Image (cartoon, rainbow, N blue to C red):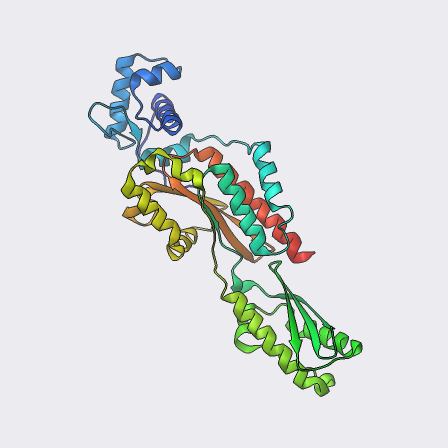
Length: 351
């Protein structure tokens, strides 16, 4: 889940002080002074000792002092140390779980609907913009094909994909008997099942079986339509984004310039996709400030988690917001939503 631990060593007292500063600053969005810390936390030390320890934490780069007369706030190194060393796991509240279930219920008929509903739930729970990528289309394949005559010149082609998406297409220009449609459907499933979309997009279906050569013209029409469907699906936007109005209420966005920068970022889908496509080898990832790969993002953090559909298909879901965020709650929520997405898409794919 975590990035590398900063090269600092803190004793138990210093850890408790840093944890208290992070907690109070996240809750109040105001620089934390020694007097306030002693009032709110049973640190068991004198005021002068606390001031000395806070100064030491600042010297080591874990705290910063925004103004000469103000208290201190966590630096990005301080947040990283907190996430890696001090943060305690929390459970996702039942109300949040209900929110996720209610959002997804009734929207679980294809992958885009599942991801959109899940991102909405995640934004509602965390108060932060959320985004997700679908399973990589390079490993999505055709799960099953159905073919049925509708009228004398119209035929219904139903394609079920391995990622849970389904598509209905009306084909015209030929007529089929019920028996011919059954025979073609069986041959289509035998020929196309398991072929990656990228292959279908580039090459269409394999050659028609020899025993059905009399239907080669129909096979050609179906092959072209399957190829078009694969091309269209591969070309779909690889990112689902749900912006949260609550995120814009953060005190950090009282700064007009920073507010404008954040709105611009949320509109740049390519930049968001690049961020979301960061480290995915772990179940979850927390990237803070410069770990996002740009000095322009020094004031932001991103929490992501991967979800899996079967053994090979994997996507990512996450949130982005100011570095001052409730990391335990956000991380727990992102991981829970990712796990839920995987389960729902698994049912869609293999049901």
